[in-house]
Length: 358
Image 1 (cartoon, rainbow, N blue to C red):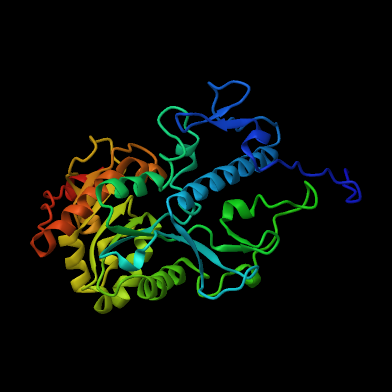
Image 2 (cartoon, rainbow, N blue to C red):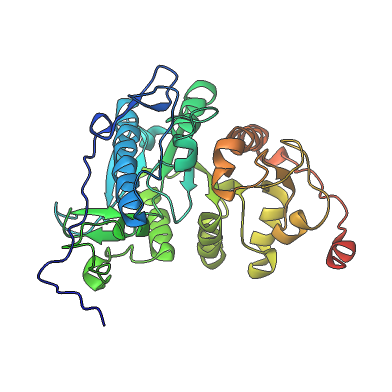
């Protein structure tokens, strides 16, 4: 029988958190390429051991996070730590807010996926050397679009992904990053998440969304500003869950919502007036093989209680925002410009009976 003597466990590999140290650079087309061969993208399998590949990938992702956040800073965005008043080195979660947001008459609040880092839609798009890039795979493209077409609109980007506090690095991280934290040796299991790794008033997705609505928006945004919301997968679910309990306080402020690859069902919404709001002033953008922007016939719209459109993304849910964010912003702008006169498109007849036969 084999025995492992813990006095001599194999050490874990460590990697630098700068692109050059990892052998990559960002070219003029905003794409990450290998220094040794600029035609090559990021390569995952460089070791036979998967754990080593994961650690290297996490170091690479950390480089991308730094680049994305630095570009947001260049655009004048502020990193706001929640809860307010938290001292440095204490548990807190960062969000992004645009400059002069207190003066904006219209504010877009973005609730992204619970699996992604702040301001990032999909790493697979960030690393895609053909159609992707740093801006394409992050919320930078959304912000740049707004800056050109709707410069008066403020932006708040919530952070549903980085909900774990790392005491070792004194920052909020995602579950993916947590499992890539350094261990004493390659045989050690992942550290256990305890109450000390939870962020006060933001311990869960529900608590974070509540804090954004009741503290960030109420304290940082003009009391008379109109609020639009983009919710992506579980971000949409949590936003609606909160609004369902507090719709009386927000129905005069929230003007329209766009859902990216939603996973909720309209039956889950108990508040009648919110259900009517979803029907009249919300749209879903879904993964579909249909041409981008085409109204989907059949069950999808009836699942969500609002018209559903093809996002142009045929397969992967996390790629929904890079594909459909322009459609979402155009819809929200249309609803804002029309005001109370806005009339949503009618949902096509449902083919649910035929659908269920399969």
